[in-house]
Image 1: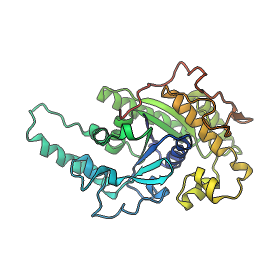
Image 2: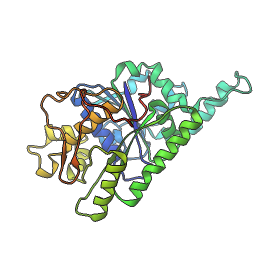
Image 3: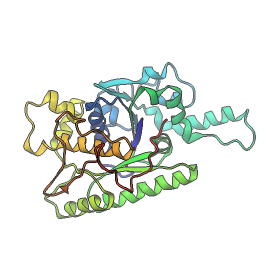
Image 4: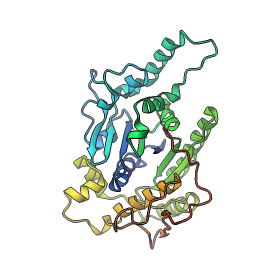
Length: 323
């Protein structure tokens, strides 16, 4: 199984859109995906896909309760199907208080532990996923935390061991990547685990702007970014329809505008790259003749690491997480 966290500590980098549409790209080739929404704020992933109806319900069960062994029902009852092959574990406002719940859990079970016992706070999500057989039920797990370097984010990192970083091609977006890398590396060293940078993705690129072009090229060259995404109305339209951009084009649009024609091919190329990074390269016919992104005049040529191609020597750590 492949697992990764989509994260940037700077808001407005497109992380939730990327998580949503990456899930649909994985699903398009038959991979079963679990999206875990760990953002308690409004406009989170479960809102994007129309499955956040219990987010403010104080009586509802949620992931927070299960993290502290107080689930109100079966873990599987929390999961909602959003699209074919795409399930969602919705977020709840209770996640804003997750540290309070974890502190209480630590105090409760610590009563029977030796003095030198340390509460495995950041392991709690991983334990819940393992205990509920998620590694066997799904091919891919994608976690979307909020844009904070907090307990929720570190639980996501501990569970997945890999991070996908979307970044707008501006100075602040470019510099945010080092911030993500530093926080992940520091956490990995503290926990004695390995965390890989699975992909960097330039988002909301406006090729008419000189600074966007310059920073997008830096992201491509310095981080081997395989694709880039422009700021297009299709992403907002998908949000309005509570669907992925894949489903938007298949069910809600009679035609795809010229400016939008590369969106799905880019996601396919991105998924092929991610799978190869995990050591599971796809066959060249994975999309049964569907179009993929092989580059353009702005981005240059893109080599897609299908099963018969060599994976780059500097591929990130192959730990897939959650297993």
